[in-house]
Image (cartoon, rainbow, N blue to C red):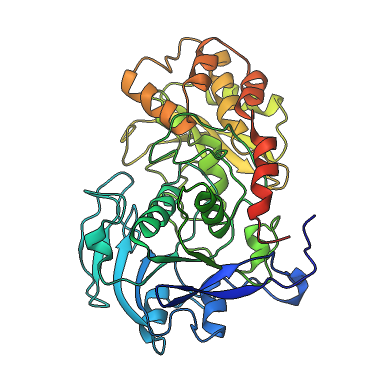
Length: 416
């Protein structure tokens, strides 16, 4: 039985002369009223960076890696006494988060810090021995959005594996899951950079907890330390953390965007629908040229989906697959994040389009079908959709294994 009432024991472990955190118990998390959430970088600073002192440090980060007050983790570690920050590592979208989805990131020297930046989304997506040469501890500080297909999860896993292979300590500075602790989705059988591990699509874990889960599955685990947050509870909404949101990628400008990414992102892999990419409302729209917006909104609202509301809407994207094409459909409103089943909306939208525009061809592109299967983690969901199964039937299929995952992953939880 988990003991949430005692303080986490953070012991120092020796590894090739290094000292790193090893969390051996759950953290006691004070009630939210006692203070807003302090992310891992802030907690590390209160400890005077003890685990990094005297070490050559590499940092995997982007624009979301910052203190509660907004200071970049890069700058914090550069100025930390006794800490030698020697290299940066860039995930998808780059260290500054300005590179488009899917575009390769180049290795270069960062002008602001003078440090080399090694790309983890270019020729390689896993740190090579040459990239890690001279690094004694690799630190990971990136805010993610709670979705399996968001590539920061794969980058975390790859970095952990590289550190295990190179016998380099790996430290995660933990941050909130903006979708809280709810779990939705299948346990995949097909793995890729957008589906890196057997975890549900909405996994309900923090990055630190994910690292613990990934590490336990390695034949030879890495020396892993997670610097936990202070004042965090698993079921918190982003607003309850008191943290300011930093755009995690070009199409995730707001905290609520994390919900919409899961609500329409799967459908964005299929040709017929616009989901708002190239508009001020990425992932918050669903429709297509010539679709009957009023009828579509009426059909979706008829379903009375908890936490969601739909308004007939029209838009013209400035970029993407539907650039300069007038689209009509719905603008989606998140009315209650606690009730909303995020990924279910993908299947309800698909089903609604099929009802009001039955000639819509969703699966006539082998390339798009393959990508949809990659994101879903198998071809099972696509085949069920092609067979005409209802949204409710697909939702039940989609959640096979989710309950078991909650039980299995609970041993890696760090928060109440």
